[in-house]
Every structure is written in C-alpha cells, then in structure tokens.
Image 1 (cartoon, rainbow, N blue to C red):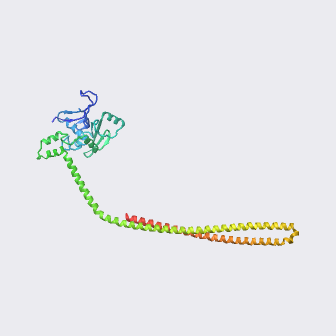
Image 2: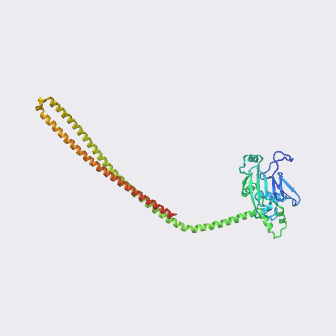
Image 3: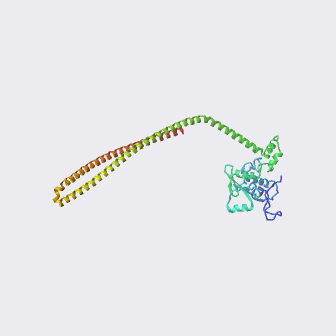
Length: 402
C-alpha cells in the first residue's frame, strides 16, 4: 500500500486553502501533527483538511510512522496487533536511530458541542487554546539504559497520565487500537496472509468489535471476584473468635460500668454524709456564736448599768457633800445606793463569768468544727484514692479490650 486515509482535523484555512476563519469540524478531528526524532522523521509537521486526507509516498518514507505517531500520542500501542506495526515491537523502535528523545504533538479540534474539559494551563496558553478551540496532546519518549524507554504525556502543556490521555481519546470516540478504525499496513498484510486456520482473523474480529477489551475486563473482574471471595472467607474464619472476644469484652465492660456506678454512688453518699456533718457543726457553731453575741449584749448592758450606777453614786456623793446637814436623813438612801452598786457589781462579775464560759464553749465548738473539717478532708482524700483505683481498673479493662 502506498498510503492511508482518515478523517482528520482542518487547518485554519478557507475552502480555497487561504488563511481565514477555521473550518468547523466535529470535536476530536485531527488538526495537525508534529513529529520530532520519531522513526524516519527528524522534524515533520502537517496540517490536515477537515474531511478526507491522502498521504502518498514511496515505501520507507515514513507514511506508517505518521499513523504510529497518532496512535502513540493518543495513549495507544502502535505495536499491539503486529510485531511490525509502525516498526519494531519495542518502544525504542519509535525513537529515531542515534537519538535519545522523540516527541509527537497532536492538535485536536475541541470547539463543538460536548468539548473535552481541559486542565488549566497558564493564562496566556489557556486563552490561546480557548480562542482557537483546540486541545493539544503531547507524547514524549526518552531512551534509557538497558534497552528501556520512558514515556510522558501532556494535555495543553500540563502533565498527564496515559490513563488521562486514553480517557480523552475515549471522550472523542477515537479507537486508535481498533484495527477497523486505524488499519496499518502490517496489520492489513497479516490479515490477508492468514496461515493459522483463521486465528488471526478471529483476533482481528475481537479487536474490531472491542470484544478483546470486554474479555480482558471480564477476566479481570473474575479474578477480582475470586480474590474478594477468598478474602471474605478468611474474614469469616477470623470473625467467629473475634465475635467471642467482643462478647467477652462487652461483658467485662458492662461489669466495670456497674462497678463504676456503684463506686460513684458510694462516693456521693460519703461526700453527702461528710457535708451533712459539716453543716451540723456549722449550725452548732452559729448557735454558739449567737449565744456569745447575746451574752456580749448582756455584758454590755451590765457595763452600762454599772456605769450608770457609778454615775449615780457620784451624784449621791456630791449630793451628800452638799447636804452634809441632811446626812443622817439620806444615810439610808446612801446605803441603798451602795447596795445597788454592789449588786450591779456582782451581776457584772456574773456576766463576765458567763461570757468566759461562752468563750470556752465557743472554743470547744470551733475545735469540733476543725475536727469536722479534718474529717471532711479525710473523706475527700479517700474519695480521690477510690477514683484513682477506679481509673486504674478502667485502664486495665481497656488494655484487656485492646
């Protein structure tokens, strides 16, 4: 065969071939291709017509290499259906001899309905791509040591994976590995020279209707199903003892929770009892303080009465000095006043003794209050120790649970 034909992307030319408004085409139609160090091409660029394109040339001039570049750039394998499709089977066969690097750049139309949502490139690049309504796919091949080759992809200048590029081709319905969509010279020759009883033609049929992909996915699904079934059986085998451990641990946790609740109730009751004792002592102390206050009031009253009696005695003495002549007459009144003063003094002393007794009683009450407070502190300390023991028990139960 001397050439191949395909539906490809238009260049930005009018129907007469002159520059002008881009000719409209469906999304995914090839607009241009650029090959660098790719097989027979050191540097090759070609703009395509929107409809049917013919590439004509002698054998070995690189026609099939252009088709292999399209397959490579869209995430396909140019060597999938034939050991000689597009050249040698190894990916190194795609890199030009004497070169360590090769690249393929495809520009696809993306301005019609349902466009490919591209990743964000730089602002300037993105503006240009949106203006021209294109999407650019780049495949870069690098020769490595040990007869190996690395490949990288970009979409609109942004790094992409082979899977993302394949998704783009699938979005545009570009089946680059389907021999009915892209038929290379070598695959065509193998089909015509069938010598294995129809096996190649059957494989061709499977590839043409994508049944080989369905078969691969079915086999992968079956293997995944077997793996899931095996994993499920292992989980079920381990599940029974784990369920027993969970049930046993749940019982321990429930028992620990009940014991915790009882200890909290006991602690609360002890704390309430301690505070009841404190309130009782405080009430007694309050009563003692009230009694002391009452006795102090009585002492104050007796003091005032004593002062009044002393004043009265002074007045009487002054009156006696003034009324010396009436001394005998007022002698009885003087004796009475003296007696009253003595009685007041006695009452004052009694009040003082009562105040002292009240002070002693208050001291005893304060001692009882201090003892009650110490009892409260001891109960609080016991409560804290019990709480610490409870926390230790919880930690041990958690450890056993783990």
